Length: 168
Image 1 (cartoon, helix red, strand yellow):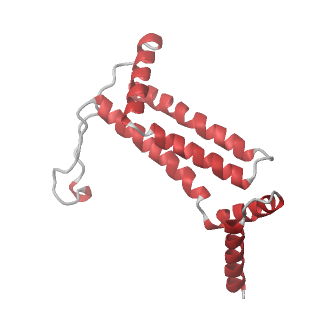
Image 2 (tube, rainbow, N blue to C red):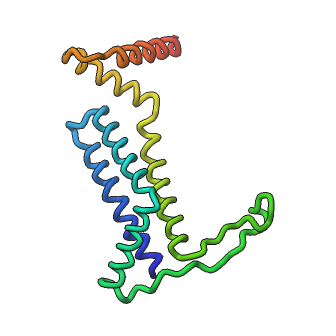
Image 3 (cartoon, rainbow, N blue to C red):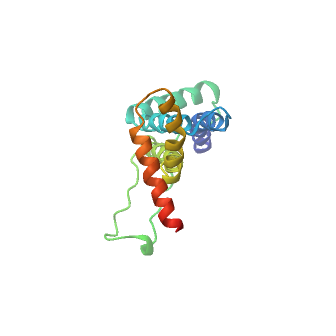
């Protein structure tokens, strides 16, 4: 029961941030460059959340809330120890790590979920085609405002030449 409560609470925390990002990206007035900055900010926020101190605060809050609001939920406990089948072992047979406390077990889950979310967001904005699109979109606005646009122009020219070579 605690496992479900922990997962729901963590999911709510992660999905709140990703939902806000999704809503902002779907807004018709958001440019690709703005969307890229928003995504980078969300990923930076998740990476900041990936700290032992912030997990400890999350853990304390979830235990406090469980005690005050949901007394029916059981105390956190370690899952049953299971040994991996020999065919899944690599190297020495006793390499499987088992957490020492429920907090260690849930810390691993917390960090794994943050890693999963950041690994789902970041690559979408690191694609070469998307970077080309951002540079093409930024070039006119920077040139109209007399801002430095050498980087964007160089990227657009380089990418245009690459596309021209590939198409011929």
